[in-house]
Length: 318
Image 1 (tube, one colour):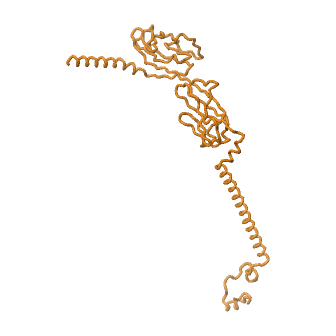
Image 2 (tube, rainbow, N blue to C red):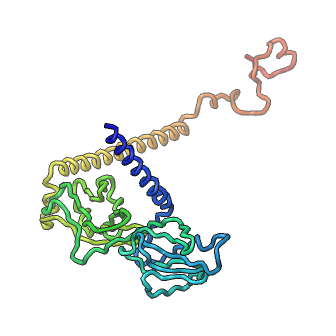
Image 3 (cartoon, rainbow, N blue to C red):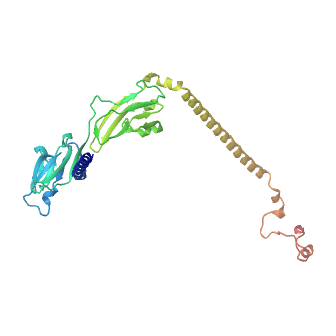
């Protein structure tokens, strides 16, 4: 029993030691780089620039633990000895240059000093790309026989892309949002058109894009029986009710306009009649000379005794 316990303890110690040896390597992967396909990137070998390093120090570049290049403080290396041309050359300070990146270049890279085995950080390279749609690849719409007021879904074809591309739609070269709330783009990129109308007939373009590239494809969507589109349209109860409602609203507005015009004519005629009557029959207030307009007219009765004393005309006596 004791021997079994010792064997188990020894195995646990070995596993723990191996995990401790692997842990620094995993922790060193500090730079995860997403490189566009056909682009160029450069990785720097830090250990050869240590304070106590020799001017002639040599750095060894590894890809997935396989030696791929040697560099020095004054010399770069190009992966797989590819042809490298650039408008702005990379300085010769120990870079590993990956030009015309492809999917075969994906992996974990690191640099070691040849003499001290000092290691750099680990660089995990992933290539970003979007595969171009083939000319025969087209979006797929359902149902294949489209009638008015159908719910139509148009699916963008699949392609390989890293990272996950964004899907957008256009109709006749314009944004799909102009069709209003009848249009919805699902999470998987499928376009859904509710109550398909004659206005929805056109060329639909699906575009898949990420920062590494873009690709698009088009398809023309129309009604299965375009010649009878207008006849079918007005044959639906919904459109019939809608037409009756519009006609009723039009006649209601015409009636409101006619009523308003009659009221306006009546008011104008009333005003004219009132004005003519005023000129024909002056007001009683202006028929008495005593009440005629004038300056300093009497506005209060006087004492008759004082009126005689002041020789006031009897016509002004009250």
